[in-house]
Length: 433
Image (cartoon, rainbow, N blue to C red; front, side, top):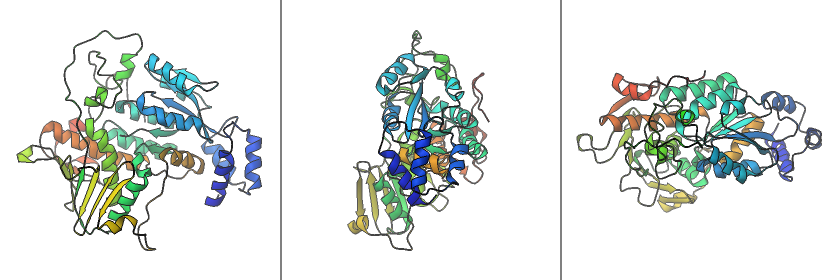
């Protein structure tokens, strides 16, 4: 199928929000001479069931899922048919918001994956559940969208990438800044050498409240707390531990994520990797703030490029690339400033690197489920970014540097540090293969 033919299909389908029949779908595609070879690809890779839209289940229905779920519900090529959450009150509220005929709700994600009529899953749970759910979903024949970061431990990220290859599924990691024009433009400016050799990079992550011991509270009837904990160590219940808010909640605890490194770091470090052209590699050294007087946490690539966290250089930007011949400052809401200023609007030449253009992260995933092409942030990319988040956190917790071998995906000569990169899973919650 050519790009033009595919866009004709997409345009035809976007003219209606109703579920059209497969007969109607075949009629549309035959009229634009799509070609018979396309249909076996769709039916074998993504069985669309009784209608032509991709049937989606959402696993984890808290705050982070709302915008994405709404987009999938309202999409011309997708429909949300199932929701799942271990919090029954959160699940009920989500069902009221989605409010579509035939919507089914579940407390256990395995029941969702057992449905043959579901094509793909959106995983928006706390980070410590991402790997098990994603691998189980792929093993069940589903395509997957995983909120960033991709995993909790380094081996989990590797296992997800292996599963994507083994089961032939489409996996998109929710590092949606790759689908923003300002971040893409910033990355193209850096990648093409317009500000010269990169000297250093600065990223603004912010802070969560410190991890603290919490008093035990009674477990409410509205949560399956054992399932919520999953692989993580047993801790006494407290509402703050399971809270799904952006100011702290579960995100402040190392048991369930990488704190701010896995929060904003998963976004910004991903753009750093992209801009430097190192999606298949990574840094070699991680140094925490305070070590031998270091004013800022940083990590360093083998060629000497350092990436600093929360330095004054960011100011109003989220990421600042400092080169020998200029500077790029980029953030959300299409914020982009360059020195010299002309770089922001300089056209790319025929010999320049043109990065993949994805105007919308969810639509890119949907498009790739239909074409079976790699999305803009597959697991191979997402897990390399996650490695940076995890290793940054380990250096912070140990209060000393750690060395990393990106080619072998291993910490160099440091068993104590590796114990933080791959710690035991609680009995009853193994990592699928």
